[in-house]
Length: 128
Image 1: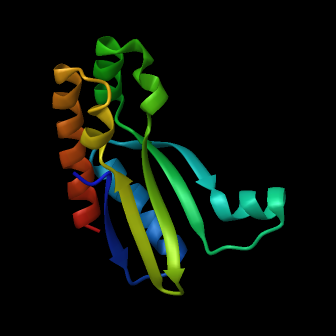
Image 2: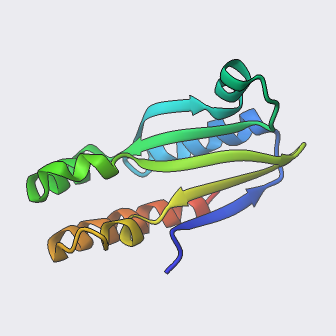
């Protein structure tokens, strides 16, 4: 089982970010964090890299269910979705596979929730 699923979009980077945020919202996810990795590394290390954002996506209902089952599962939340520019006009979108990450916990009820979240995230990526 892969730890992520992805798709390459032929679009400018900022358009891809906007499309991902809308696609997440359409499937019940909010973006609760938005980390500009390229800007952070430039300011902290002085290095240049292509555009790269990590969007922390959260579906409140699923997050609440998971937290009721495993109070420390917040260490694995939110679901990260990356948007990275491979080349101008070529942007890869990749989402974590929550089923793969939740297997480490060993809670069958949590795996069931993860599969539901996985289905929504796969649908989001495929529909971009």
